[in-house]
Length: 330
Image 1: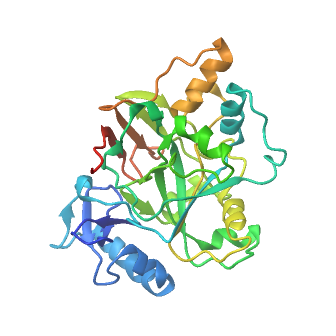
Image 2: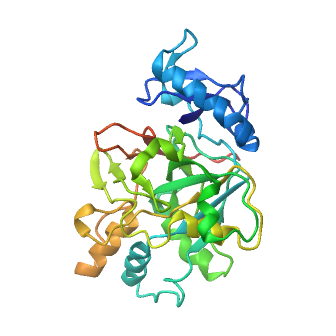
Image 3: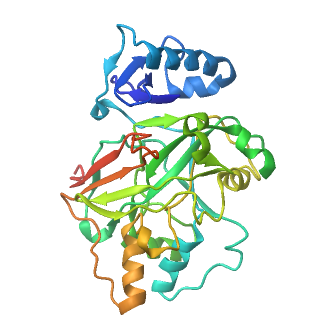
C-alpha cells in the first residue's frame, strides 16, 4: 500500500491513503490520525489500512480526492530518528579520491552512519532554503526505510522483519561546510540541513520483486534544471543492504517505531549510469582532468528525484524542489 501525509495546519498532518497510480487519495485518519500513530500500532492498524487501499484501487468512494502533492508533507513530517548511512562504497571512494583522502580501514566491513536532524523534515515540494550559495549546495538522491520497533542488538538476518515502509530522500548537503565540521571530530551538523522525502511511502510488498535482499533494485532518476544528472540503480553496487544498516543502527540501542534509515547517495561503478549528486560528478571531473567544472546548486535551480517501475509508472511520486535564499530573522 501507499501512504502519505496531507498538511492540515498541525505539526504532523493527517494520514491519507494514496492509490497505486498516485491519482487519488483517501483519508485514513479514522484508522490512525497520523502515520506515526499507525506505526506505533502497526500489527493492528496495517490490515485495516490494507483493506482501505484495496477499496481505493478497486472502487473509489465519494470521499476520494484528486492528488495534489503540493499539499503533502513528508510521510513523517517529524521523526523520532533519522539516521543516514553511506551504503555505496563507490560514492565514498570517488569523493575521497578526488580530494586525496584515504578510505577508512574498515570501510568495506562496516557502514558509516550519522544522526541527522529529524524534527522538521521537508515535504516533496518544499523549497531548499539556504542562506549562502558559497556553502556548496548539493542534492543527494537516496532510498530510505521506516522501521517498526527494532530491538537492540537485532541480528542482520532478522533485521528486515522490521521494515515497514520505503521512500525516497533528498539528503541536502552543504559541501563547503563539511570539511570544517569533520575536522572538529564530532561530524555533520550545520552541513546537513533539513532532508526532503517523497510524497508517499510504500510497503515492501508494493515493490514486488524489485525489493529483494534488503535492496531496491530500480534506477533512481535525478534531474537538475530539467537535465538528467544520473539514473543509477539503487540495488546495484549497494555494498551494505538495509539489513546491515538496521542491524548497525540498533547495535547499542533500541530503534523506536518511526525511525528512518537512509541508504546514502545511490552510486554505481558504471559511469554511464551517472551520479545522484553533484559532488560525485565533480569528483569524476577532478579525477579525470584535475578540475571540477560542474558548479553546485544556485538560487533558482530546480531538482527532481523519482523512481519508476519497469512500465514507467512513478512509484513514490517525485521530489521536486527549488533552491531559494533564506532570509534569517534579525
